[in-house]
Amino acid sequence: MIPVKGKTIDEHTRCEHYHSPLDIIAIKMKCCDAYYPCIYCHQQDAGHDAIVWPADEFDTKAILCGACGTEMTINQYLQSNYSCPFCKAAFNPSCNNHNHFYFEV
Image (cartoon, rainbow, N blue to C red; front, side, top):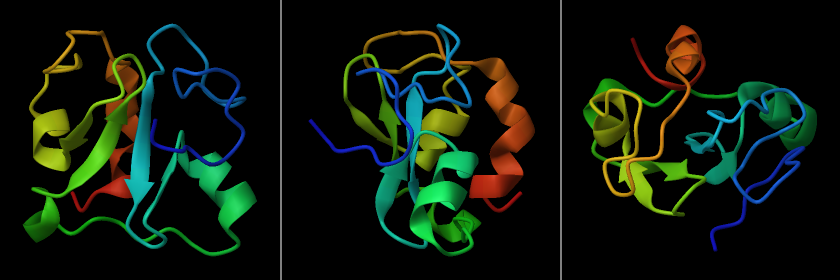
């Protein structure tokens, strides 16, 4: 199992900030090479500002499915239509509203 830092509240990467049934991804932060459930967990735990992933690095494995534990690339996640391409678990489509915190848009 890949460790997820921050205020996780269950084994599916949900955190105290986002914990609906669909909030089951973690993002590897570019700045510290560690997985966090959300930007707010990173802000509370890391002690530094987040750095977004540049578009030319979207083939990097930086998304963790909290259902099956599979790492996927940023491109795989962005093209997934909000479900894991490996186990088909549904992801929260509202995460799209936060892409600018993590990815160059």
